[in-house]
Image 1 (cartoon, rainbow, N blue to C red):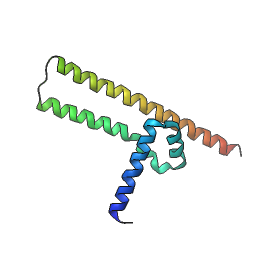
Image 2: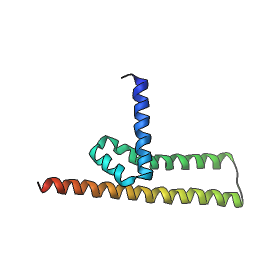
Image 3: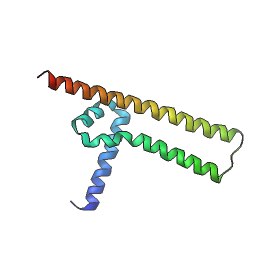
Image 4: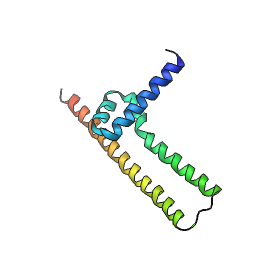
Length: 109
């Protein structure tokens, strides 16, 4: 497998897992429990949040914003923080519950 085809395969798999986490979280978390190599895809929203806040700080340094625009930017950044944080908590909860269910199933055998 060449580097280019491996990169395309990796990006495709990553995007497929992210799509599944957005629209079918339970099914995708079950798939991640079966294939633990996909676990890093769970932290992608945190990376996106980190990039969003870095861009916000750079934008605040480069552009002075006052009044209503500043409030709007704060609302957008704050709501994205809470949304992504709650979504990550849901995904971690599903992951932990499915891993514990899998352990309980193997211990009962």
